[in-house]
Each structure stands twice: as structure tokens, then as C-alpha cells.
Image (cartoon, rainbow over the protein chains, first blue to last red):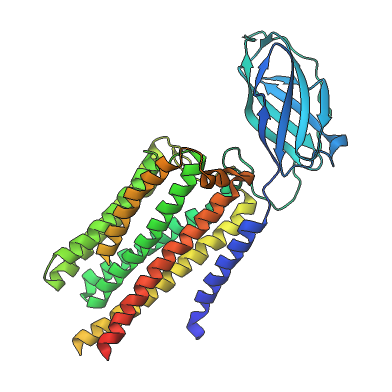
Amino acid sequence: MAKQWWKFLSALLILFTLALGFRAPLAPGIVSVSPDMLSYGATSVAILGYNTKFKSAESSLQVWLANSDLVYCPYELVVVDETHIRASFSIADEIGDSFFDLYINSDADGTIMLPAAFMQNGINVGLSPIRPQPCLKPLAATETGAFNYPNQSILNETIRNILFHVPSWFAMIFLMLASLVSSIRYLSGNKAMDDLAAANAAHVGLAFAIVGLATGSLWARFTWGAWWVSDPRLNGAAIGVLIYLAYFVLRSSVGDEEKAARLGAVYNIFAFFMMILFVMVLPRLTDSLHPGVGGNPAFSKYDLDDNLRVVFYPAVIGWIGMGMWILQIRNRISKLKLNKILR
Amino acid sequence: MTKHLMVFIVVVASILPQIGLAQTGNSWLENTMYESGKINVVIGVVVLMFLILLVYLISIDRKLKRLEKDDK
């Protein structure tokens, strides 16, 4: 039992990520505004917040619109309750940009914003806009210090999926690496068990890849609006899965077992680098909906802030541990089988 | 096992677009997914993850059972 501690550790880490992944609240944010168009003159809009404390922090509450470098404050502001505000803005007939970003600042929520909250409707957009009077008072603290996850429009609560969808891909890549190592060991030592271990690791890795594809697909459906979008990152991941399916087809299609093991091991070394190329390298060369694409890894402070990291890294370690556990069980079965043949 | 995997992928690939089509007309399932900050999408993701791994573990369990049966 002394060597089993890492199994308990990974199970504990997964429990930890489940508990914190669901319990920690989302940071305050702005969900929507209605109407989302501003015309010349006065417009009254309703603002809907999420996890906000508008009423409790009413005395320090400030609402403003940013349009290029212009700042518009409402001439009338009614705080309905913790999540609802009615604000009335007066807009001049020449502005600097077609879109208005909405900002709200208070000492309870810090500064929250909705980018391009309003579109202009029939106002002149020019280089010499009419400047409104400076109206902002000194802002309340921008950092509230609470443990919460970033609140992004469209993503909303689904940002928590980072703690489940991404670690399964990490586990897949780790298992494929284990498979690569076993294949190299087979080629240098010719031990049948190394070949079986390589096949087992690729098999478990494939299971985690299917978890990654399925969870990503569900996530995409309710944020991007489709189960699958033809996107370099997604297609790359699918090709990565197909490459490893081909590994199993190759292994099972060669009759002679030793030849199959040898061919499989050689193919597996290629497969690993092809998979890395399709999953990690190629998607970064083009633009995509998926984070971690177009040059920047998915670890920017907007996608993965410090609070998420506290839960994300244990999740990665936990799921890699689970994958290794399943791999170990499969390897023990293979060893039993092998011993039976040899007996 | 590879055969099972292939069947699984083909079935999923053929079912997914059907679900997508069925849900374009705002079914209750789709509506719940958008409620309260889309939190149910997270629950769906976790359930999916555990279900797939459960099916995988059951398949390993059956493999071991066959081996045990042969041993007797």
C-alpha cells in the first residue's frame, strides 16, 4: 500500500477541484443592457448585472460610457436592486466611435465592464467629436480581493469548464508521452511488455481525448452556438485522435505479432510528433475562436486568472494521476495475459 | 476494443448533428442550458466526463472478467 499514495492524492485533487470548481462564485459582471442602441439625445437603458451588489454599494456606485476617449456619465441613475440599474444618458450628435463600452465601479464590485455594450444609432461619427464635461469622481478600489473566477460575456459560468475540459487534454498528452517512451523502450529492448504498455497508454490517452472532444463539443454548443466549428484547433485535435486510431488499426492488421509490435512502435513515435504538431503547433499559426490559438497560449490573465490557476493545476495533476492509474490497471491485465501465454 | 471505439465514434458522430437539429427549436433542454449563467453546461461537461470514463472502466472490467474466466 506504500506505493499507492499517488492514487489517493489524485482522487483527492479531483475532489478538491470539483468542490472549489463549483463552489467559488463568479466575479461580478454585466450580463446585458436593453436597449443596446444609443441615439442622438436622451436614452434610458436598463442594465442587468450578475453577482453584483449595486444596491449595497449605491453610495459609491459610478456608471459611465467610454466612446473612443470620451466619457459619458448618466444624467439620471436609479438603482433598482442588487442586479438592476436604470440609467439615462444624453449623447451629443457627434461622437468618436460607433460603439460604447459600459463601465460600472463601486467599492463592493470594483470596476466591471461590458465591451461594446451599445451601438450608435444615427449619430455622426467623426474625428472632432463634441466633448462632454469631465464627470468621473475618484474610483473605488478595483480589486475586491474575493476568491472568484473571471466573469466574461458569453462564457459566464462556463469558464469553470476550463477545470475539466483542459486537464483531460493534458492527461491525454501525458499518456501519449508515456506511450512514446514505451515504444522507444520496445525498439531498444524488444520486450513484448513494452509494446503492450505503449498500446495501453495510447488507449487510455485516446479515452481522455474522447472526453476532451465530447466536453469541448458541449461547451462550444452553448457558447459558440455549434457542436463543431471548422477551426484549426478543433480539427487538429480530431486529426490527432485519428492518428492514434490508425495506430490501433495498424497494430491489429499485421498478423505476425512481433512484426506488428515493431511496426506499431515505429509508427507510434511518428504519431506522437504528428499529434503534437496538429494539436499544439499548427493551431497557433492561424486565428481561431478557441483560446490558445493565433500565437498566444491559453494562459492569458483573462482566460486563466490566478484564482482559476489555484484549482486548474491540481486538476491537471489529478487527472494525469487518474490516467496513470487506469494505465497501470491495463498494464497489469496485459502482464497477466502475457504470463498466461508464456506458461 | 478498437472496434468498440470505432463504433462509439461513428454512433456519436451520427447522433450529434441530429441532436443539434432537434434543438434549434428552443427545447426545454436547450433553455435550461442558458439559464443562470449557463451553469448547467458545466454540470453537463462534468457528467459527460464521468460517464465516458465510467464506460471505459466498465470495458476494462469486462476485459479482466474474461481473463479470470479463462483462468478457471
